[in-house]
Length: 394
Figure 1: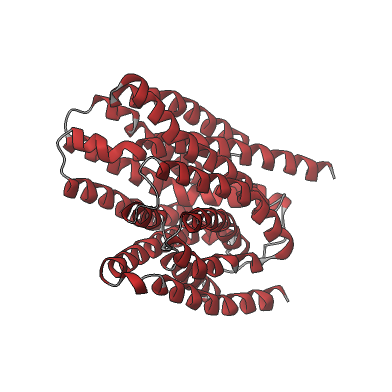
Figure 2: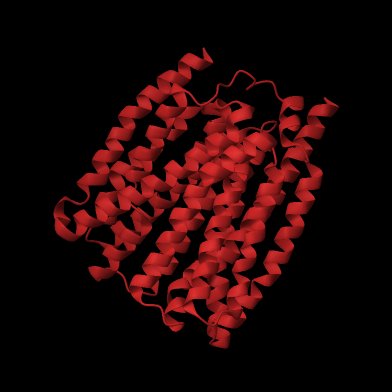
C-alpha cells in the first residue's frame, strides 16, 4: 500500500511538472507563431515565402518524429531527447536578434524540428508516468495545462507588442519562460530518471500489450481518417471572415475560446476513458461529421457552436488517442509507436486541409460533404478497432 501511494505521488508530480513545462513551451512557440507571419513580412519576406517557411517547418517537424521515436526506443534516452527538443525552443527568443528573414526562417524551422524531436519521447515518458493513476486522467491533466499555455502565449505577445510597438521586446520576454522550462525538465528528469523501470515496478496491467501489429495499423488508419475529416480552425475562420460573419479581431478570441473548451474537456475525457474504455474515441468522428456543416454555415451562432465542438474534439484527440496507444503498445516499442502516430496525425490534417480547402474554393456548396464522408469512414473503421479491443481484453 505504501508502494502504491509512493507511485501515485511520483506520477502526479511528474505529470504536473511536465504539464507546466508544456504550458511554458506553448507560451513560447504559440506566442511566436501568432506573430510569425507579420514578423517575417517586416523583415522583407513575401507571402509566398511565409507560406513556404511555415509549411517546411511543419513538414520537417512531423517527419523527424519517425526518427526520434525509433531512436528513443533503441537507446532509451527518453529524457535526453526530450531535453534536447525543449532546449531548441531557445530559437524563439533568439528571434529578437535576427536582422533578415533568412535567419528568422532558420530559427522558426529549427523550433519545429525541436518539437518533432521531443514529442515521441515525451509522450512515452508520460505513458510510463501515468500508468499508476490511469493514463486517460494523466494525459488529460497534461492537456489541460498545455492548453492554458496555448491561450496565454498569443495574449502575452499581443500585450508586449501593443505596449512596445516592436517585436524585439516580445521575443526577449520569452527568455523568462524558457529558463524556467529547462529547469523544470531537469527536475523531472532527476525525479524519474528511468520511466520504463517505474512502470514495470508498479504496473503489471499492460504487460501483455503487443508491438506494432495489425491492431495498431487499424488504429493508425482510424487516426488518419479522423484528422483528415476534421475541419481545421483556419478554414472555419477563413469562412467566417470571407462571408462577413465575423471581423478580424474576433477570430483570436474565438480560437482562445475553443482552446479553453479543449482544456476543460481533456481531464473529463481522460477520466471517462479510464472507466469506459476505447468507446471514448467515437465522439471524434461523430463530431467530424457535424462540424463542417456548422463551420461552413451562414450564421454567427453556427460559427460559435463549431468552435465549441472543435475544442471538444481536440480535447478528446489529444488525451484519449495518446492514452489508447500506451495501453496497447508494449514498452519496448512505445517511442516508435508515438513517432508513427504523431506523423500520421499531422499527415491527416495536412491532407484534409488541402482537400477541403480546394473543395471550398471550387465547389463551395459541396465542401462540407467531403470531411463529413471521411469522418463517416472513420466511424466504420472504429467498429474494427472496437471489436479488436474487445477481443484483446477478453
